[in-house]
Amino acid sequence: MWHGRFKQGMAEMVKDFTQSLDIDWRMAECDIQGSIAHVRMLGKTGLLKVDEAEKIELGLQKVLREIQNGTFKPSRDLEDVHMNIEARLTEIEPLGAKLHTARSRNDQVATTTRLYLRERLKSLTLDLRELLKVFVNNAEHHVNVIIPGYTHMQQAQPISMGHYWLAWYEAFKRDSSRLDFALDSLNECPLGAGALAGSTLPIDREMTSEILGFSSPTRNSLDSVAQRDYMTDYHYFASMLMIHVSRLCNDLINWNTQEFAFIVLPDEFCTGSSMMPQKKNPDVLELARGKTGQVIGNFIDLLFTLKGLPMTYNRDLQEDKRGLWASLDTVESVVRILTALLAKVDVNEKVALSGLEKGYSLATDVAEYLVSKGVPFRDAHMKVGKLVGWCIENNLSFEDLTLTQWQEHIPEVDEAMLKILSPRESVRRRNVFGGTGFDQVMERIQEVNL
Ligand code: ARG
Image 1 (cartoon, rainbow, N blue to C red):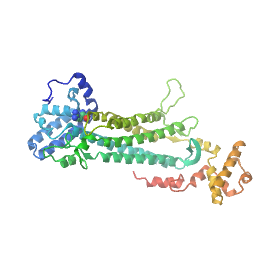
Image 2 (image 1 turned 135 degrees about the vertical axis):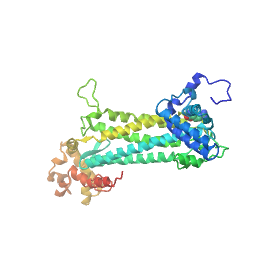
Image 3 (image 1 turned 60 degrees about the vertical axis):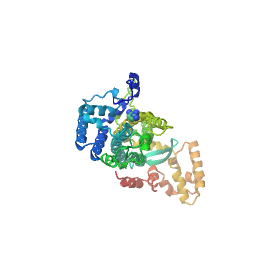
Image 4 (image 1 turned 180 degrees about the horizontal axis):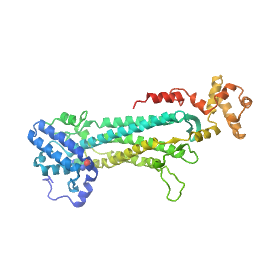
């Protein structure tokens, strides 16, 4: 349609190959929103008569209703969401032929996509806030619960489970800042950039930008239709978020094993096995971890699409949305289900603690105690290390040692040291800003403002 240049219509296979309707139809309402802003501007600037602009807007509202009640069946013959809507509008209201004045699909698609992405990111901001709240709630419930903290998957030092949850709060809070940044980077309006160079007609870009709720029009028409870094900013946010999700899920999957058994997952978030009746599998966590690859893959996909593209718009850019939608849908579902699951995770403190008592996770506490008695840290480290070696050879834990045995190996040890030798004291005494001390964790919880 609308083409005077061609003698023959497009081959069917080419229509199939070039259409983007299956991808961009979901932006239909945002496309109409953009067109309404555009036509109001055309009316205001005198490019259309006021009553023409009003009739076109009414026509657009009609098309919108047809979309909302599902009676509008778009056709792939019309390639994409933009042409389908314009064609339907013109059927309803012949003045629709004036809508595309001073506009190209290049600035149109850039505007529509930003509007759609903005909606999704705003909704994601709310979802993410719920996730952050769960970490803080869990932290509050579990401040006094002690679990082993790990480095290299080896027991390192006892920590408050509250501190563990707050560690995730910090990471996802940064993700939330990255999401704010992504929202910020789509906040300029490309409408009016035209195909690439702007327009000879006296349009008012400030006006469309304002109607659509952007901070300002974009400042360079070439840049407006050529670049997609407002999308890559989203993808970076999404990839980091999913990397955090995958690590969190992995911890919980480990801690849910019979070997660890630190945590209990809610039944309604687990699945059974078709063969083994005893199984209660953490599939939700595994799937959340497993979806990380696609989200990172979608990021890489777009980066590769963009690499080396000449200025300005190239049809390659039509491929920018497929992975974006997939990523948005995945991230949204993961954040929501994780929020629901995390709210119901129980900790089996007895089991977590019993693991700790057999190990030597208080070795650093002993070394630091010796430092407070004037022993240089390196000497203290050596002495405690030797004692641990001796205990392992003799199948003893720190708890089994009498004061005399302690002093045989480390003369500086005194009665008072034995009193600090418990996981609870160990956590309590790590009362440094940002440390796992119970008071510290409580203070961090109180600081949260969500
Ligand atoms: N369907 C296209 C896209 O999503 C529309 C943009 C303009 N097309 C064009 N041939 N200039 O990118």
